Image 1: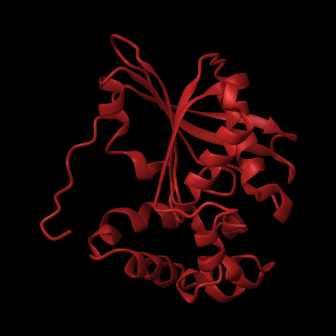
Image 2 (image 1 turned 180 degrees about the vertical axis):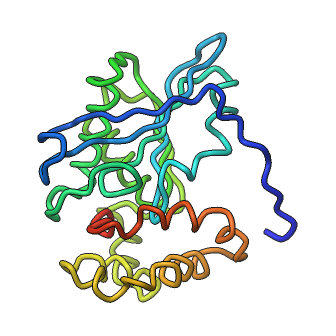
Length: 225
């Protein structure tokens, strides 16, 4: 992306919050979901839930949150469990895509009280979460879109899940080993993911610093399971 220039980000209508999905605050069992929300000013057209990928956070959507809201949509961009400012409880079973989808469904229906059908947009493994959401809550889903992701149960997913280019999936399935090996080398590790998946390294300049703030504050790698 030679010549890419950062455009101003209008955060004036953004608000952030946390949804306590389960457990007790401040305990290892706590599951709280951080989110950013932007309400439309006129002519509401619906609700859009933006689900980020790995190794990202809701920060990934910073350039489109306000424009979507300006177009009439109520925009909600969470950090899913294990990422960003959301909880990172231990236990691999808690990071199945169906569980992450349940977290987000609770955020939408219970915490925010949204009753209407929503539009889902997922990137990378966020696309798998969006698919899990739509397949389990079809009566709460108006549309679903995903990109740069293979879906479990498809032939292409089975072909790529153990491809050397996706080594980080199997690597992060290990308990404690990723943290031990990558500790102190987080920048090198995260930047290598972008170098392998982007034609240009320019993305590193803008996003790696934000993602690294929360990436290895212990057990964050579990979001890949």
